[in-house]
Image (tube, rainbow, N blue to C red):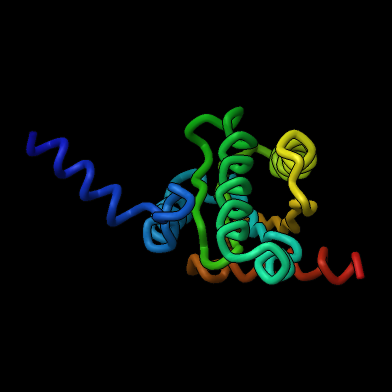
Length: 168
């Protein structure tokens, strides 16, 4: 009984209550552990931002906005199934999510991003959403000059904003 209780308390402390994904604190700690491990140069971080999220909230209400975030979280989980235990998924804040994954090449990270885009299109059509659920994704590889988790996150964030800027 004690173990069940402790497990449930750990979940309450470590998981985002809306999406069920890792919360920011657990996510950052997990990424830091990976950055200091042997596979450091094989770590890729994806910064994922729900497109036009404010418009979804403003047009359809906050309950539908919450539904959009849960749907996006489910898509991220689904896209990471082929990665098995090599990926950590978490909600970074608001409508931003992070996937930190171990991969031999950047092409595997790009394929995961492509899978996310495809799954979002399929999910939007399948659930007849009144809006298009899409996301922008920036990808960065952990390099030796990155000393902190925030160095890696900032690199992915820069790639995210480059993608967003190129679409406008």
